[in-house]
Image (tube, rainbow, N blue to C red; front, side):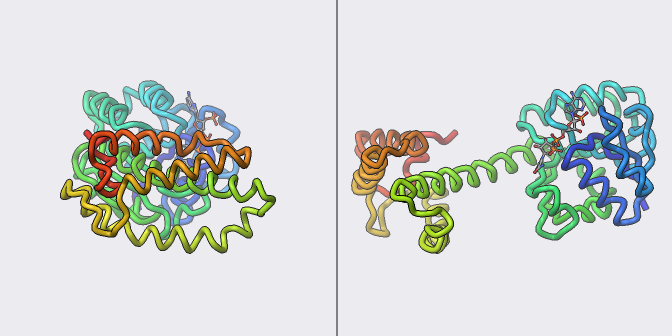
Length: 286
Ligand SMILES: NC(=O)c1ccc[n+]([C@@H]2O[C@H](COP(=O)([O-])OP(=O)(O)OC[C@H]3O[C@@H](n4cnc5c(N)ncnc54)[C@H](OP(=O)(O)O)[C@@H]3O)[C@@H](O)[C@H]2O)c1
């Protein structure tokens, strides 16, 4: 089995290293604060004295630290050992950061795959954990087996920035959902309704609205925003104005939804009040 090195042993890196041990890999670990390696060493991992030793030991080198500044710094420290290594960087960052680090790795002779982890640490090793990966396809194919021990894999092609882009886009969808949840529960909370009680109404409503996403996606792809469902934007803008006014009346903040109302007003003012909500993307899209 592939010898794996894991660099960065925070909550996520420790879960990755632990799962590689579970799968039977020889695992070498390195962390800036060495004591965090102790539980893994107790389970059979080898503690590398320096990050370059960890890079040299791994047929597959997995990096998972706080951000790209840290990832770049630790990989620079190991520059002399990078030639011929396959580096899979699972640190969260932007596409531009991933592309820049990929160039630096290529300059040092490493084969570089970038990745995003759509999971929390306890999910690592289960099929529900999703890893988005892009970059050097040969390195990915060579280590697909080892990586698949961490969760489900989605390969996104040769651009090392794509894994980060998809990762952040999925998180953007999640934070939009969380924003709606917080606004809704704050509003009913102003009348002392517990969020967990309100979920009996909110959760099925959100699930029903999620069922509209294929239609919304079609409108976005076709750039045809006709309000076929009978819910035109001008009407919906009035509804969102009412949401924000009701929030204010109840003593609840409006910051989460104000940007949405502002885009709706602009789009209506531009003459698209008869269209549907997906037309708002014309105001923000590339
Ligand atoms: N936890 C999650 O739910 C989750 C989910 C998906 C993706 N991720 C991503 O996984 C990555 C790691 O997250 P985490 O939860 O493991 O974070 P964490 O528990 O806060 O650990 C951060 C890690 O980064 C290291 N680090 C920070 N700055 C460093 C530097 N300048 N030089 C060297 N090492 C440095 C830390 O080393 P020390 O121990 O020495 O401080 C530690 O190993 C992040 O990019 C995060 O976005 C996390």
